[in-house]
Amino acid sequence: MNKLFYPAIFHTAEESGFWVSFPDLPECLTEGDDMQDAYEMAVEALGLCLTERKKDGEVIPDPTEINKIDTEDGVLVIVEFDMLEYQKKHNSRAVKKTLSIPEWLNEEAVNRGVNFSQLLQEALMAKLNIGR
Image (cartoon, rainbow, N blue to C red; front, side, top):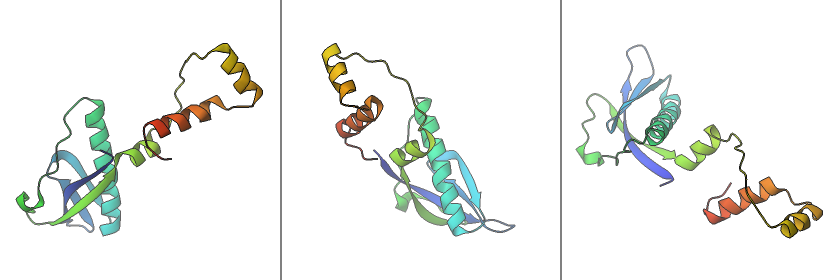
């Protein structure tokens, strides 16, 4: 579930630019000065909303089928969101982990100049089948 696609409605703002709403996530609203800015802000707002829901243990709804959406006075746009990329961008703080390995393995790795943090990150990404 890394890439998600949610329908958004882009409304023309009275002043200028656009404001954006997501039918499946009523709390998710944003705006932008032009279409590109509004889309970029929609991706960020969607990311914030989905990660907050996930963190709070709330349900992340399935996107509504586009033929069932009332666009009101706006234009329907599908917003692509990559959960993994968002996490990398916004949640890359290092976390300390304590682990145990056999002494002989530790000594051999130290003698060969192994960077334990880098090795663990690479091994976890390979195990989880995710790239950098």
